[in-house]
Length: 212
Length: 351
Image (tube, rainbow over all chains, first blue to last red; front, side, top):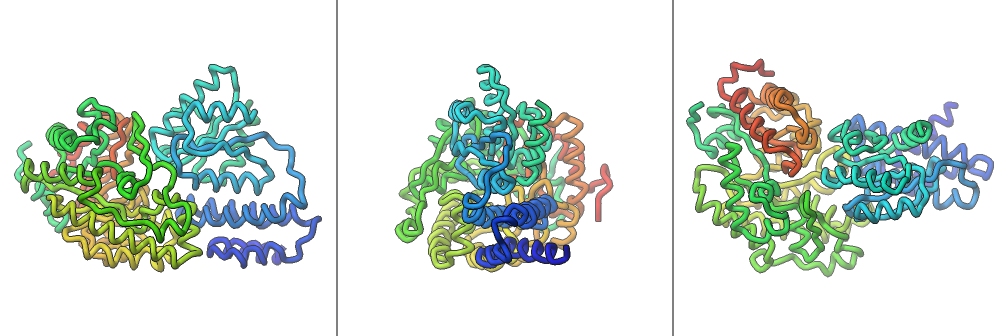
């Protein structure tokens, strides 16, 4: 138990220091096909959760959250496809509404992958129509929408309306700076949930899917 | 209520940590001018005279203490030849990043300020506004810091990889951005801007860990800010500043703009007469504030940081969203007069 906790602390510190080589070396220690899933849970999932919580408490920076997610995504790219079959989880799609800032989307994408999801990336700079069309085409159960500015956040309401008009009962999870600055904004735009940090996304997906 | 000082006198007193007749109010109204004139954002920003007319009207209407010549953040991307997308209900946004490879950084040319039409419009508006307000109100020009501009030039993700893993390319980009920033800031000062608001969101510990900032961005800010030929305000655009306060003060900037998450009382105390605080109303929540909430939020801000001067009430991000109702802005203005008139007897101040 102590060894696991030491390994976790070392891995998390390597991520926070943006030490790509160090993080990979720690991840590989004693790794085999039988332990890969457990290793992902123990190191990647736990570390990203802790770093996300630290971001909420203003201990860690957005840059550290992002770079940690990217380093973990690289490890998943290296090890996950070769050794593990994805779990049976809801289909989720993710896109950036109007804006071209994709940082938040990439963080959430990496967190989803580390938790066994295979998210469908709808892209960025999307109009309401493009996002709705892409989401319907993806047949996602949950649509994650990333926004940077208030006007794009408010357009999530139009996404909801278009989906309703087409009889699609897709759950919407809203994210981005406007939702951190106003914790009730997701209700205003008729989303089904939002979180204070990217690592909240797994719990929110589980909650909104259960509520359907 | 009879006010004894001009907006400029009031602001200078606050910045010098003296109590003016009342706490200055900086409603940072940029795109909001399009709403005032009933124009689309694209039409509004196409002519300097629109900005002049709207700024003067809004100063009177909201009894605002500043003129804000900020057009939109993406204007600097536009100056470098990048794409800007105009939308109907929000500020123009930067399109796809124009730096897509590190070779693009080496090839990138610093724009000639006077020969770049979008920047020339800002300078034209600044000159006209200076003629109209003379020395009665501060005219606030805006630049992006060399350190934060690459978020729009190349996208945040690519920029972070550059910053952490490619120091040579990073320094090349900083050199060009610094040259642009200084030329742009000093052109605005020459056109009549009283001070420059230096937007630097990436410096905030919310955005990048302090040790990385100190090793990368801080030397650039220390080298850039003293070369701006007028007073500066460093604005972190909703980011927290307290853990960096000493460093920010050491750059020579006079004002720090902070977001709603900031411990304003702690920040005021720690600034100890070195920095005037600009903030920190929540511009997103402001959209739905009732009269009672406006009064509560303004009172809270002034109570936390108003005593002894050194406070300018403003939003915490650097621009009032278009979606904020005019009535809310009028209530904010009224509440600043009610609670911010010195001596601050109506409220129990901290410190």
